[in-house]
Length: 360
Image 1 (spheres, rainbow, N blue to C red):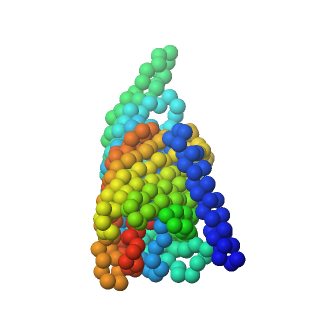
Image 2: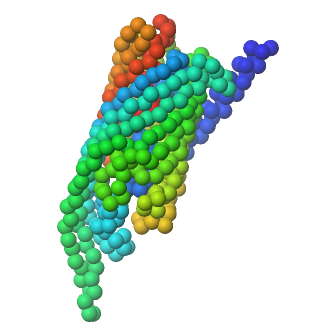
Image 3: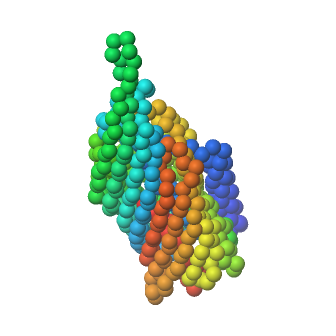
């Protein structure tokens, strides 16, 4: 009686959370749209990937990630950045034709701990991410302003080239998660947030931190058949952004979906595909908003390769993901690469290695 009751409770959690994941995915699918202050967000698309909802070995783990991205943005994003640093007033009749280029290199360290004692019938884990990086932003803009001299209307144009670079620590991101497993089906839920302690200056184009707090939570599902080696994972989440106290700008509510599909050719070697969608559910606001609703969109797709090295009581997992972005509007677009190394307690001989849960 106790065993069947426990199974029923587990089934209830799995069906409820899986249903929530499907609902988020459906909300994301109809129209890709995202917007955040100057086109930068708390959530980094691609943070979750394959095996995201599978269980981990209890104990301490350490994940190290190198993240490189190279993006460019058009006039709308460049205009928003110029408004923030005071080079453009934000007047409706002010025309900005510009391009903004932004390469970025980040190193993230994420220590985590997985509890052996079940919580609500699932496996609980906590983690925190710390970032150090370098970002360079350059913007070339042609700014045209209407002028009125007597009864004649004319315009004044100027060409503005701005570039700056910043190196330093980023914001901190604590995270808690719960995972449940029934056969080949795995479900997880998580909550994370942004603690704005990183290098940030509203008068600067380049920033490592985003300057405001945020709260993010979601659910995920992983199908993992150890016999065939096939795996599919999807994690959907929602981000609520607090008001930036320096600019009085509040980014809208964001929706995001990360997915990965892979096959283990051996117990150590994994290959597959990855992708993401990133959306906004509400317009930007705040008393400092001078760009309007500022809706935009971005999606990405690419490939992944993973390999696990057994080291006795520890396993080392190396994972590489590369994405090409497309369908962007009012948000930078380009490509990015993730190189992740996870050191964790050794899996049992029958279990396959788990990919990194959460990167920067």
